[in-house]
Length: 513
Image 1 (cartoon, one colour):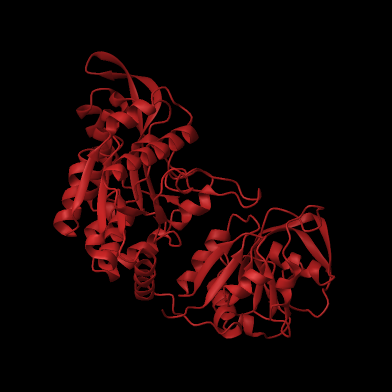
Image 2: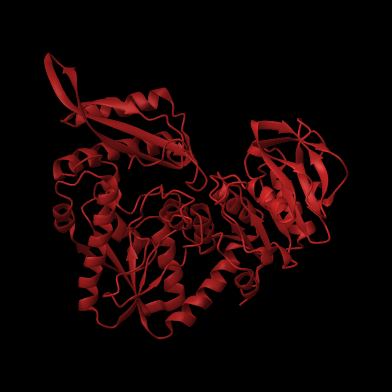
């Protein structure tokens, strides 16, 4: 297996930590997010090439401020501290920090005190994004200031002897104009890392890793028919061939006729034989009367496990279960030592119950969605499959706030089908990252013909994103929205109002639950 350079990002709870990981990977360097309790010994054992200390909401002068193993700063590997990370470094080297009444938040201009390789190709006066309340009053030992903000506050500190660098601004956000250049300078000029994080490298290494882990044993592969599981199916088929069996579960929460479409797509277009099992009644029965979104997600996840237990009872020779968990699923489902909020639980994150003897294979649990698509293109999968919009593991269960019933599902499936068909017909489908319909648990008065109606409301949702971590609402043409609205209220009895969701992420999430 070819060795790749590895950057670890120590996460102190910043809303931008995942974005740092994405930006580093965009520069073809592998990055991974780890917890603050990581030790210097673990970093050495894993042959980490460089470290980034993220920002965070805490103040380093608080009594219980998150910290790191002090030995990390003596590892002799390049370290970049961002915002909170810079202040933490300053504190460890006896710098003085105070919490100011005046925060630096928003756009600022960098003024360079001297030329430095961290800012190669960047001109003094470049725009950066600030977001901090603490300020460095006294320079930490061994460091020098190479840049200041418009307010003459230290914006970049360096200690070239120890290969430790700190910046008070956020290079990972779009508002920092030369942020990618600065990150690239740290990774390549300062740390000397190779840009060898490529789709083909991932495929070669992952196939080798899977073959080594599985040997001649057999894998049960859980498929949803979405981009992630379709790419996983091809990858595992290439790695294991007939020792991998694809299983598709109809949980009753799929889009209109999706069960048949998925099986046909996998078998006809990807040449992957699929076993299909219909457990829709079981899922809906378990969800009866449940309205809390987290409880719904957990019930769906638990029933999935129960279903796979039953399937494995029939296939006694399986040793592994494969599923298409992505990195954002892992990130959003965990709490970083109480510092980062759990956004939502994902039904395929959290491991298997002890009574289930299958070992877990998640080949994409370190990847973002766009990286999976790049892997798929390298594997030769056609664009129709790779271009499909993301579909949540709990399916339409998170697009029906409140209790889920068969009647509600039928309405939502029909409305969603109209929206997606019109998007494809108009050419807008491939211009948005994800689009869907939500059935709102509200009824409103309407007039159809000469009759008063009191029926359901649906919301159209369309967003643009690269990885689902942040998203902007899509500015779809008014005539398209009008056509979709007209078709839904005229063709679906039970819906008399259509609204369009124009909330970005943050502050909202992409899905409603």
